[in-house]
Structures are given as C-alpha cells and as structure tokens.
Length: 262
Ligand code: ADP
Ligand code: MG
Image (tube, rainbow, N blue to C red; front, side, top):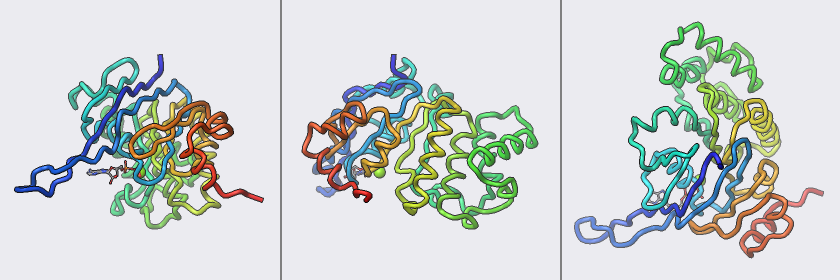
C-alpha cells in the first residue's frame, strides 16, 4: 500500500466578476490528478509555473479544500477528516517552502522558530529539551549552535533554507513536501541543499513529494516523476524513463529547457 494516494483530485477556483461578485467562470487549477507515493521514496512533481503544483501540495495538507477526489494517507481518507482528526497527521506531514525569508518570521530568533512547532506538537517537553532538539537539528542541517540567537535576515538564502528544513524536521515528520525548495537559491547553493535533503531523507527514512519547475533538479531527487501541465498530469513514470524516453511533447519541452552543462 502506498503511503500517499491521490485519486482524481480536482481543485477549481471560482473567478468572480459577475453581477454582485457572482462566479462567472472557474480556473481548473488541478483537474483529475491521480498519483501515488510509496513509503520511503521520492516522487517529483514537475511542470512550469501555474501548472497547479502548489495547489496540489496545499490540498494534501488540507490548507485549501478540494473540489472533488480522494487523498489517502496511510490508508486514511484525509479530505474527509475534520481539522481535529487531521491534527496528528499535521505533525507527520511537513512542508518546506520555496521562499525561506517569506516563511520564516523575521521577528523570531532561530531558537523560537525551531521551538514553535515543538511547542505545538510536543507539549510535554521542557524548554531545555526543546533547545537540545533545536541544537541537534541545526547540526544536522549544517549550521552552528550560535545560530539560535540570530534572526533570519542575518543568514544567506541557502542558510535560511537550512533553517526551513530544520523547522520541518523539528516534529519528526514521515512525509515531507518540498515546494520549489531551491528555486530561489543561487545555482551554486542549489546542489548543497538538494544533497542535504537527500541525506536527511535517508537518515530519517522520509517519504518525499518534491516539487520544482526544473526537470533536471527533479530528476536528481526523484525515483518517480509526475509531469503536470495546465492542471492535468500528462505523463508519469520512473524518473529515468520519463527523462530518457518522454512520451509527451510537453515533457520533451521541459527537457529541452534544461541547460546542458558542457
Ligand atoms: P504552480 O505551483 O505549478 O506554479 P499553482 O498551483 O500555484 O501553480 O497555480 C495553479 C493555477 O491556479 C494558477 O493559474 C493560479 O493562478 C491558480 N490559483 C492558485 N491559487 C489560487 C486561488 N487561491 N484563487 C484563484 N486561483 C488560484
Ligand atoms: Mg508553485
């Protein structure tokens, strides 16, 4: 049984512009999307900007409602769950965002940023215990202990993404959604963060949904690749197969957009 199974997921947004703000049309941001993620594996979700990738990610974490379809996590239908029922799974399913500066509160020290999810999910721990966890997390993501007293703006983009990853790991998730985690970073830093994610996945036996618009990056990370275009899946399969024998023109176009390193 796969850890995550998405069946015929549809997410439509109303376009309001009619009389008294009535919906005049819908944007089919996600249109009948189905895929599965095996436990311990990485599935890459690729497609150009606006293809619906982040909308899928948000629906998986119940941050937005789905219009139709089923999402099963560890055999349980999560779209049917109330927020209360879903709370324990909120801990298991964590997200790493594209823009670490936008997702890290600028007025919080790194210590508070790393303590916050622990306060929510490990209420029984003392402040010292949380701090020890935070120090271990910083070490894990390659940052020094004295980072705890500093603020997000004092770090480089790559370091901030390391903090974002540490925060996601703070509650010991099983399933990590990484939404364009290196797209805002310099090319020279991207590989370091990708390799960090790979190491962490191995060490914690994480299951990953890795989202990016860059097929080379997705291939580097993924066992399987799902290609999205205008809200639909145009192709999916093992990473090597999709990249070496693309069956869809759109996948070929994404491959053609990958810079060739000489
Ligand atoms: P991607 O992550 O692949 O770049 P998104 O999932 O962010 O794409 O967006 C897919 C489509 O859905 C886009 O056309 C976007 O404008 C639209 N969209 C996303 N969120 C909303 C929303 N809350 N309301 C209306 N349209 C939205
Ligand atoms: Mg996106």
